[in-house]
Length: 170
Image (cartoon, rainbow, N blue to C red):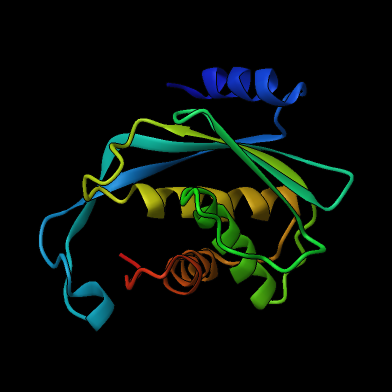
């Protein structure tokens, strides 16, 4: 998978070219598997597998998501309170939007296509990669003045608060 292929998937799904395509790597953890959220020492390393998100802004308050690897779509209206989806995967995107809103950032409607080659559930941080890619895509799409450190904290808040998984920032 490369950015051109992701762009083509996005265009096929949404009928427009994406504004941005973001890739975020998975990671392995050499030491410290369950200590990073307890302030312990860790030694992670990026791997050559990625989550990709392609995005474009919308002229309404909708967030339209499509996960191409599972061929599922989900949509919400930002005028409504954010709620968890029973599908599972939309919660990582919704969690990032929630964290950005909690942080005082304005996010409007957007289309997002999600794909990747990180094995899901294999312990190589596919969810963290999706959250990091999403927060970076929102930063550039909405011209948010947010530091890299704050983006990492937003991804962690999404996982902790919205998804409900206790994790650190590894």
